[in-house]
Image 1 (cartoon, rainbow, N blue to C red):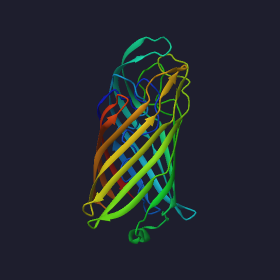
Image 2 (cartoon, rainbow, N blue to C red; image 1 turned 135 degrees about the vertical axis):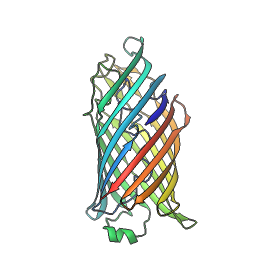
Image 3 (cartoon, helix red, strand yellow; image 1 turned 180 degrees about the vertical axis):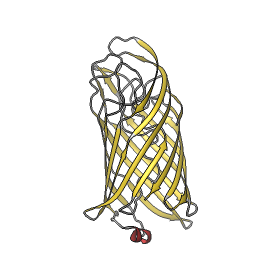
Image 4 (cartoon, rainbow, N blue to C red; image 1 turned 120 degrees about the vertical axis):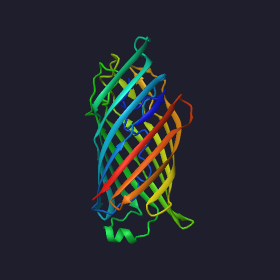
Length: 305
């Protein structure tokens, strides 16, 4: 659930076609290894991206993301694939300047239905052996480096006559190199995750507001998390994210919406059972040069089988 999103437009939500990045990034502990042969089902309630900035907008969203994740061995290396069908409802209001006419348009709209499909893949490069559960439980983890790629397919609900859509009408391709550094502090397991990535967008040849084409620059992102196991079941941590780029051009006219924002937050997780755990995160903008203003909450429930 997203609360009070002023000045910031989230992907596939309002006025302009979106990108792939979730509002709170991939989240803490999303890059940690799992034993191979394990399936992971995740369900959550969070806004799913924040790739385009539009001034003076107010958006509320309630988005449900169901994730299926599979860890497996690829030539002896740890590999992971996860698929995200996205469903939800968004309501918003705001004003936008039509790049073709120069007129300011005040709009209110809402959308409900299916969002774009997100498919992610990761393969280990350094410190990422593919281990079965018995070996995984006894293996001491070391520095890990992986290669990451994702595709967002524009299958979601989209109508260029509506200013508010859950679908995007663009393909998004993201690549990155997630890293994990495990260590101990006061005999407690600690994990530092560092994930630089960049997202690329295809043109939207049927954008909203009657334009002919909308182009978007790449979005550069750095996400980091520092988490600590306080007990065998309870962990918590600090989150930090930086985004730059993703400016759009409509019919050859710049929309003047380059992102330049640092966000942070806190997360906490608890394992009710070795196969069932829950995680919640709160995040907000810490510093910006683009007019962004954001508060967000994410809830995640995981089942392992």
